[in-house]
Amino acid sequence: MLRRVPLALIVALIPLLGLQFFGPRLPRPLNLPAPQTVETRNPLIGVHTRLTGVGDEAYIRRTLEQVREMGAPWIVELFPWAYVQPRSRYGYDWAGADMVIAHARRQGLTVVARLDLVPAWARPPRTTDRYLDPEHYADYAAYVAAFAERYRPLGVRHLIIWNEPNLRFEWGERPPDPGAYAALLKVVYPAVKAVVPDAIVIAGALSPGGALDGGQTRMDDMQYLASLYDAQAGPFFDMWAVHAYGGQEPPDAPPAPEKANFLRIELVRALMDRFGDMAKPIIVTEGGYNDHPRWQASVRPADRIRWTIATYEQALTYPWLEAVALWQFSAPYATRSYPDAWNFVAPDGTPRAIYDAVREYARGRQGIGDFGF
Image 1: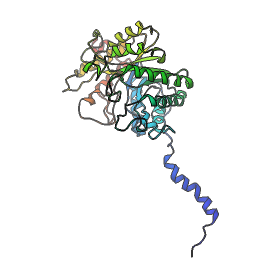
Image 2: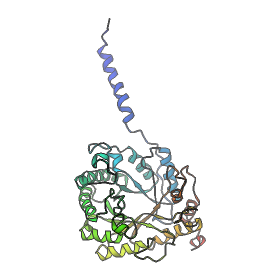
Image 3: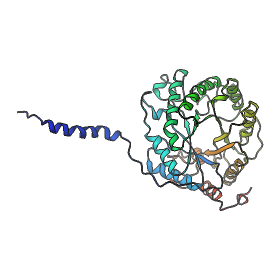
């Protein structure tokens, strides 16, 4: 014989059942340290981190503590659109970004947010996560604006719009198209400024160097920049990002159109000035040296140390340079190949020699001459 469940018991069970369903989906409270400040002799020192998507709060906290202790006030971090709106344009999952930005703020770091990677719902089937059609420019702009509005109270103002759009790979396996990228900026910029007027919209971050495959694989970065100005994109960004890798030359090696080295930033500066953008600053969001023992494009570990510190020091001579964020501070996994040799810190948190040298420089414990330049 079935017995009727008392109504009072049903009412009491409803909150418990709701907690079982919604509880795992609620963001967990973060274990945030006391606020810190960065001690450094050079306020332009920065690094590119690789933290979004890790989900390990202890790893994120430790990494950002090490960045601060090295004396770097700046980080560049990718916050993929595909992570925040994975299923549709309706609703946002901010948990991963919240974790990184909250911990960076507690360490006293300035976050430069790179925003790209397209969710599957916003692109055609069998396309890559770099493929963005004009019909979804407004959706992407809404994401950037929502990101800006959420994190401006936490000090985030710098927003990078896409990455290396002059590369076929980064433009969704399509030939680079500066006109299409200019059109994207014209949609994003007003959307962001409408909600965060003092946001800094950053364009650029081009792959440095000349054309590859007649511009089909890579469009010459200088040609691409000039084409953006021809497309009237100038009023739709506040700062230009540059990837300024040193290659196998010291950072004071003279620039040339056919060379990709650190001083290519001077060519970029001159081109921007020619188009009347003298007042806009530049920020280096990737750069540096690789010291893998068996990679053909690497340098000796001693040269990497001297030239990295020389890069940071030389940056101080450019009043128009906002920061220099070198690639890359660390990665959560090892490739056991040359990509590991970009790192300042191993995946397990062990500092490499480059980390110790930059920390000593940033804290003023050694003079510039002690590093051999």
